[in-house]
Length: 117
Image (cartoon, rainbow, N blue to C red):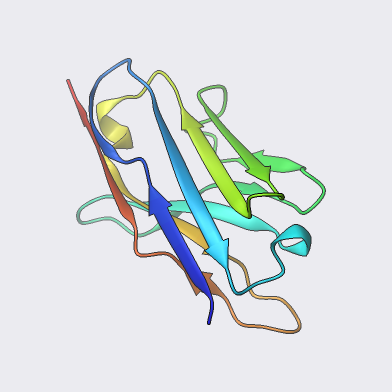
């Protein structure tokens, strides 16, 4: 059974930082690309950042220079370090394991991030 469990969300003032974690189980984490998405109220879910099994990363323009995605393959965990947070970063953040040729896509349950002005 595949599980993606996010943690680390919360309430923070603008300019602050949070670190999200996503613990994966049931997949071969070391060869899996991983991603973080977010969904704000009334908006579509959007891609925030991706990381390949080799550690290559990509970011949405809105978070470049402020967010950092990383992974610890020994712990089967992917992280999202979020700095200089803005009120517009307020959303539910979801961990994602993209579909591969051998398995379907998986999502975590989401963790709420609220940035106050």
